[in-house]
Image (cartoon, rainbow, N blue to C red; front, side):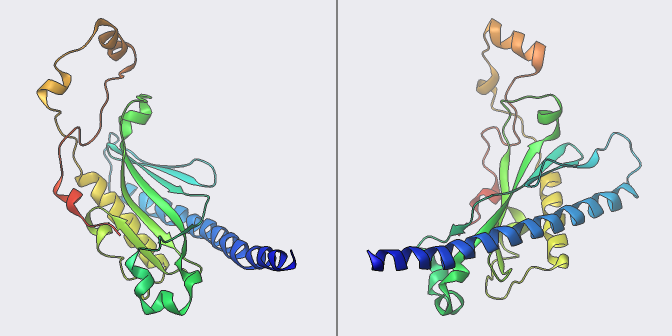
Length: 226
Protein backbone atom coordinates (compact mmCIF):
# COMPACT_ATOMS: atom_id res chain seq x y z
CA UNK A 1 0.00 0.00 0.00
CA UNK A 2 2.82 2.40 0.82
CA UNK A 3 4.40 1.77 -2.59
CA UNK A 4 1.08 2.54 -4.28
CA UNK A 5 0.79 5.77 -2.34
CA UNK A 6 4.29 6.79 -3.42
CA UNK A 7 3.42 6.13 -7.06
CA UNK A 8 0.21 8.15 -6.80
CA UNK A 9 2.01 11.04 -5.10
CA UNK A 10 4.73 10.98 -7.74
CA UNK A 11 2.15 11.13 -10.52
CA UNK A 12 0.29 13.99 -8.85
CA UNK A 13 3.40 16.02 -8.05
CA UNK A 14 5.09 15.44 -11.39
CA UNK A 15 2.86 14.37 -14.28
CA UNK A 16 -0.30 16.16 -13.14
CA UNK A 17 1.64 19.31 -12.33
CA UNK A 18 3.43 19.11 -15.69
CA UNK A 19 0.13 18.90 -17.55
CA UNK A 20 -1.33 21.79 -15.59
CA UNK A 21 1.76 23.92 -16.25
CA UNK A 22 1.50 23.23 -19.98
CA UNK A 23 -2.23 23.96 -20.01
CA UNK A 24 -1.71 27.25 -18.15
CA UNK A 25 1.10 28.32 -20.48
CA UNK A 26 -0.93 27.42 -23.56
CA UNK A 27 -3.64 29.81 -22.38
CA UNK A 28 -0.99 32.53 -22.28
CA UNK A 29 0.15 31.54 -25.79
CA UNK A 30 -3.45 31.63 -26.99
CA UNK A 31 -3.76 35.14 -25.61
CA UNK A 32 -0.71 36.09 -27.68
CA UNK A 33 -2.41 34.59 -30.73
CA UNK A 34 -5.49 36.74 -30.06
CA UNK A 35 -3.41 39.93 -29.95
CA UNK A 36 -1.50 39.14 -33.13
CA UNK A 37 -4.61 38.00 -35.02
CA UNK A 38 -6.33 41.27 -34.11
CA UNK A 39 -3.25 43.23 -35.13
CA UNK A 40 -3.09 41.47 -38.51
CA UNK A 41 -6.78 42.11 -39.21
CA UNK A 42 -6.45 45.79 -38.28
CA UNK A 43 -3.44 46.09 -40.58
CA UNK A 44 -5.40 44.54 -43.45
CA UNK A 45 -8.25 46.97 -42.87
CA UNK A 46 -5.95 49.89 -43.61
CA UNK A 47 -5.52 48.64 -47.19
CA UNK A 48 -8.93 47.09 -47.87
CA UNK A 49 -11.58 49.74 -48.45
CA UNK A 50 -14.25 47.59 -50.11
CA UNK A 51 -17.04 47.32 -47.47
CA UNK A 52 -18.13 43.96 -48.90
CA UNK A 53 -14.89 42.30 -47.82
CA UNK A 54 -15.29 41.01 -44.29
CA UNK A 55 -12.45 41.60 -41.83
CA UNK A 56 -13.25 41.08 -38.17
CA UNK A 57 -12.27 39.13 -35.06
CA UNK A 58 -14.57 37.80 -32.35
CA UNK A 59 -13.49 36.08 -29.16
CA UNK A 60 -15.71 33.15 -28.19
CA UNK A 61 -14.62 32.70 -24.59
CA UNK A 62 -11.11 31.87 -23.43
CA UNK A 63 -10.49 29.01 -25.83
CA UNK A 64 -11.84 30.07 -29.22
CA UNK A 65 -11.39 32.89 -31.71
CA UNK A 66 -13.47 33.46 -34.85
CA UNK A 67 -11.85 35.39 -37.69
CA UNK A 68 -13.95 36.61 -40.62
CA UNK A 69 -11.67 37.20 -43.59
CA UNK A 70 -13.31 37.69 -46.96
CA UNK A 71 -15.72 34.82 -47.59
CA UNK A 72 -14.02 32.62 -44.99
CA UNK A 73 -14.28 32.10 -41.27
CA UNK A 74 -11.29 30.72 -39.40
CA UNK A 75 -11.79 29.15 -35.99
CA UNK A 76 -8.73 29.04 -33.72
CA UNK A 77 -9.46 26.62 -30.89
CA UNK A 78 -7.29 25.80 -27.88
CA UNK A 79 -7.99 22.31 -26.58
CA UNK A 80 -8.40 22.26 -22.82
CA UNK A 81 -6.47 18.98 -22.41
CA UNK A 82 -2.77 18.13 -22.66
CA UNK A 83 -1.70 15.18 -24.80
CA UNK A 84 1.28 12.82 -24.92
CA UNK A 85 2.70 11.75 -28.28
CA UNK A 86 1.84 8.11 -29.11
CA UNK A 87 4.62 5.62 -28.37
CA UNK A 88 5.00 4.81 -32.06
CA UNK A 89 5.68 8.43 -33.02
CA UNK A 90 9.21 8.66 -34.51
CA UNK A 91 9.95 11.79 -32.48
CA UNK A 92 10.49 9.55 -29.44
CA UNK A 93 13.63 8.37 -31.23
CA UNK A 94 15.12 11.88 -31.35
CA UNK A 95 17.75 13.10 -28.93
CA UNK A 96 15.48 15.91 -27.77
CA UNK A 97 12.80 13.60 -26.38
CA UNK A 98 15.19 10.86 -25.28
CA UNK A 99 16.91 13.35 -22.98
CA UNK A 100 13.62 14.17 -21.24
CA UNK A 101 10.36 12.42 -21.99
CA UNK A 102 8.34 15.22 -20.35
CA UNK A 103 9.06 17.18 -23.51
CA UNK A 104 6.67 14.83 -25.30
CA UNK A 105 3.56 16.32 -23.68
CA UNK A 106 1.72 19.05 -25.59
CA UNK A 107 -1.08 21.52 -25.57
CA UNK A 108 -2.79 21.80 -28.97
CA UNK A 109 -4.23 24.71 -30.92
CA UNK A 110 -6.49 23.74 -33.84
CA UNK A 111 -7.34 25.93 -36.84
CA UNK A 112 -10.53 25.17 -38.80
CA UNK A 113 -11.70 26.77 -42.04
CA UNK A 114 -15.42 27.34 -42.69
CA UNK A 115 -17.34 29.41 -45.18
CA UNK A 116 -18.35 32.68 -43.55
CA UNK A 117 -21.91 32.28 -44.82
CA UNK A 118 -22.19 28.96 -42.99
CA UNK A 119 -22.06 30.85 -39.69
CA UNK A 120 -23.79 34.03 -40.80
CA UNK A 121 -26.76 32.08 -42.21
CA UNK A 122 -26.68 29.48 -39.44
CA UNK A 123 -26.29 26.63 -41.94
CA UNK A 124 -25.62 24.01 -39.29
CA UNK A 125 -25.10 21.17 -41.80
CA UNK A 126 -22.19 22.90 -43.54
CA UNK A 127 -18.73 21.43 -43.21
CA UNK A 128 -15.48 22.99 -42.07
CA UNK A 129 -11.99 21.57 -42.42
CA UNK A 130 -9.01 21.31 -40.14
CA UNK A 131 -6.19 23.17 -41.90
CA UNK A 132 -3.62 23.10 -39.12
CA UNK A 133 -2.82 22.17 -35.55
CA UNK A 134 0.07 23.33 -33.42
CA UNK A 135 1.66 21.31 -30.60
CA UNK A 136 3.29 23.28 -27.76
CA UNK A 137 5.39 21.63 -25.06
CA UNK A 138 6.57 22.86 -21.65
CA UNK A 139 9.54 24.67 -23.21
CA UNK A 140 7.40 26.35 -25.88
CA UNK A 141 8.98 24.21 -28.54
CA UNK A 142 6.40 23.68 -31.25
CA UNK A 143 5.63 21.56 -34.28
CA UNK A 144 2.75 21.76 -36.72
CA UNK A 145 0.66 19.54 -38.90
CA UNK A 146 -1.31 21.19 -41.61
CA UNK A 147 -2.16 22.13 -45.15
CA UNK A 148 -0.04 24.30 -47.42
CA UNK A 149 2.88 26.04 -45.71
CA UNK A 150 1.56 24.94 -42.34
CA UNK A 151 2.53 21.38 -43.24
CA UNK A 152 6.24 21.95 -43.72
CA UNK A 153 7.43 25.24 -42.18
CA UNK A 154 7.29 24.20 -38.53
CA UNK A 155 8.30 20.54 -38.31
CA UNK A 156 11.57 20.73 -36.34
CA UNK A 157 10.44 20.30 -32.72
CA UNK A 158 13.90 20.49 -31.17
CA UNK A 159 14.88 23.78 -32.80
CA UNK A 160 11.56 25.56 -33.22
CA UNK A 161 10.79 27.79 -30.23
CA UNK A 162 7.64 29.90 -30.35
CA UNK A 163 8.10 33.65 -30.77
CA UNK A 164 5.78 36.53 -31.68
CA UNK A 165 7.31 36.55 -35.16
CA UNK A 166 6.51 32.86 -35.55
CA UNK A 167 2.93 33.35 -34.35
CA UNK A 168 2.56 36.11 -36.93
CA UNK A 169 3.91 33.81 -39.65
CA UNK A 170 1.49 31.05 -38.62
CA UNK A 171 -1.46 33.45 -38.59
CA UNK A 172 -0.54 34.86 -42.01
CA UNK A 173 -0.16 31.34 -43.40
CA UNK A 174 -3.64 30.36 -42.18
CA UNK A 175 -5.13 33.51 -43.72
CA UNK A 176 -3.40 32.88 -47.06
CA UNK A 177 -4.38 29.20 -47.20
CA UNK A 178 -8.04 29.92 -46.41
CA UNK A 179 -8.26 32.61 -49.08
CA UNK A 180 -6.67 30.33 -51.69
CA UNK A 181 -8.84 27.32 -50.74
CA UNK A 182 -11.77 27.84 -53.11
CA UNK A 183 -15.34 26.64 -52.94
CA UNK A 184 -15.77 23.88 -55.50
CA UNK A 185 -18.84 22.92 -57.51
CA UNK A 186 -20.32 19.66 -56.16
CA UNK A 187 -20.76 16.65 -58.44
CA UNK A 188 -24.03 16.89 -60.39
CA UNK A 189 -25.39 13.66 -58.92
CA UNK A 190 -24.76 14.97 -55.40
CA UNK A 191 -27.45 17.65 -55.80
CA UNK A 192 -29.64 16.10 -58.51
CA UNK A 193 -32.43 14.84 -56.27
CA UNK A 194 -34.25 16.62 -53.44
CA UNK A 195 -37.43 15.88 -51.54
CA UNK A 196 -40.19 18.45 -51.08
CA UNK A 197 -39.16 18.76 -47.45
CA UNK A 198 -35.53 19.37 -48.35
CA UNK A 199 -36.33 22.12 -50.87
CA UNK A 200 -38.57 23.77 -48.28
CA UNK A 201 -35.73 23.67 -45.80
CA UNK A 202 -33.40 25.22 -48.37
CA UNK A 203 -35.87 28.00 -49.03
CA UNK A 204 -36.50 28.65 -45.35
CA UNK A 205 -33.04 28.34 -43.87
CA UNK A 206 -30.46 27.63 -46.59
CA UNK A 207 -29.78 24.16 -45.20
CA UNK A 208 -28.24 22.63 -48.34
CA UNK A 209 -24.94 21.28 -47.07
CA UNK A 210 -22.00 23.32 -48.30
CA UNK A 211 -18.28 22.95 -47.83
CA UNK A 212 -15.19 23.98 -49.66
CA UNK A 213 -14.49 20.50 -51.01
CA UNK A 214 -17.77 18.69 -51.55
CA UNK A 215 -16.14 15.48 -52.69
CA UNK A 216 -13.13 16.78 -54.59
CA UNK A 217 -9.65 15.71 -53.51
CA UNK A 218 -7.09 18.50 -53.28
CA UNK A 219 -3.38 18.20 -53.98
CA UNK A 220 -2.72 19.55 -50.50
CA UNK A 221 -4.58 16.55 -49.08
CA UNK A 222 -1.51 14.47 -49.88
CA UNK A 223 0.59 16.19 -47.21
CA UNK A 224 2.11 13.71 -44.79
CA UNK A 225 1.01 14.33 -41.21
CA UNK A 226 2.92 13.23 -38.14
